[in-house]
View 1: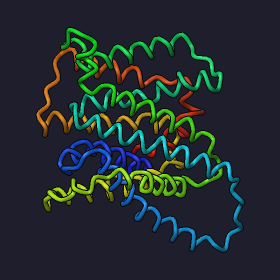
View 2 (view 1 turned 180 degrees about the vertical axis):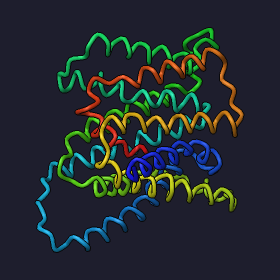
View 3 (view 1 turned 90 degrees about the horizontal axis):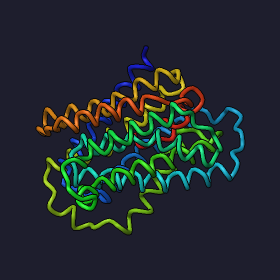
Length: 299
């Protein structure tokens, strides 16, 4: 029960990241840079302490391939984060989050090509349900042209979901490297990759309130959430995880509607429902979901 509570809390906290990101006053690259920096500091400290405590134990050598995969996975993760927060800049949280959670469906589709995993007819049906829901929640019915629809920012959310899926698929090859160390490597890589791209002038106008939300987003929504996430993940069954991950989008949508006063129309509500129905189906749930969630350092 304690593990379930920690996992549910981690999902609930991350569900509020969209609301907090809007109040940071930062653009996507600067915000992701701060997230990576804060997470590297907090999780690096936790990993260092845990390593000191277990230094007497026999250590199993980690293949170099695992570190290379962690770095590649880190690149996909950082791009995923940048696109996700970029989508939050230009579209409602409800829309961005609904599209973003298409990632597990994309994992199944891409995985069927890379790993030659067969997709059932039922899987294809649920994919089209998801796709239709995404078009509706994205507001395709509100535009007379496809160009107008694409200009709303849906491509950012789709790109985020795609790179989230690549993060998950790449992470399937990481077997021996601890989840905590893997995340520290990835967030540290994010600091190095994003530092040259950061526009430091964007920090000049920030208020005390902005800094509060920035630090909460970095240390709580990233560092602390990862700690709760990884410390509970291995104690839970895949079916339990499959249910609890829905806490994230539910909280995000509720906060968007109640606090930010977003009012989706009937078609968008139908779209949200269809997306949730679609992503609830996964024929690989028992053997693949833990690895997919593990590599979702998108949390």
